[in-house]
Length: 208
Image (cartoon, rainbow, N blue to C red):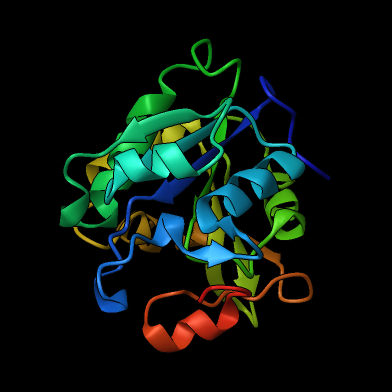
């Protein structure tokens, strides 16, 4: 079951601010995969999964990402504190969602990481399908282990943002609320690898 389309119940939040420190300073959003920047692949997958509106948090080389990547129709948020880690980007993204009225009625958000191209629209749609209103809390699972994407109902955004520090993102919040998380098996439709190091670039097609 997919989430609502633009203006539906589940918005998309793509965290794409990373500077690729272990990749020699190559911004992750601009890494090429199948002839397009990773950020475009993730936006397209969120839309195919039925999420909307799509909010994209940029940081490293934000200007270049805006110039090179097709982000038309997205709400683009620039995080000046991106070097402090994923937590700052998650806070910026959640703040940009505002109220349900400001997000076209969305009262939950699907959080996706730009450096996980093996997680596509099918996995995103499955997790978005766990939407049960403003208190929703769900995550993909792989071999029984929790991973991304993560679905956060609007009633949880403030507390998630409060605990988002460094590179932890929502990890501390999810640990504290483990018993409330609906795990959605996605191992048959997605691969949860990260593009963190030069060796990981082998996962990308046409990365150069």
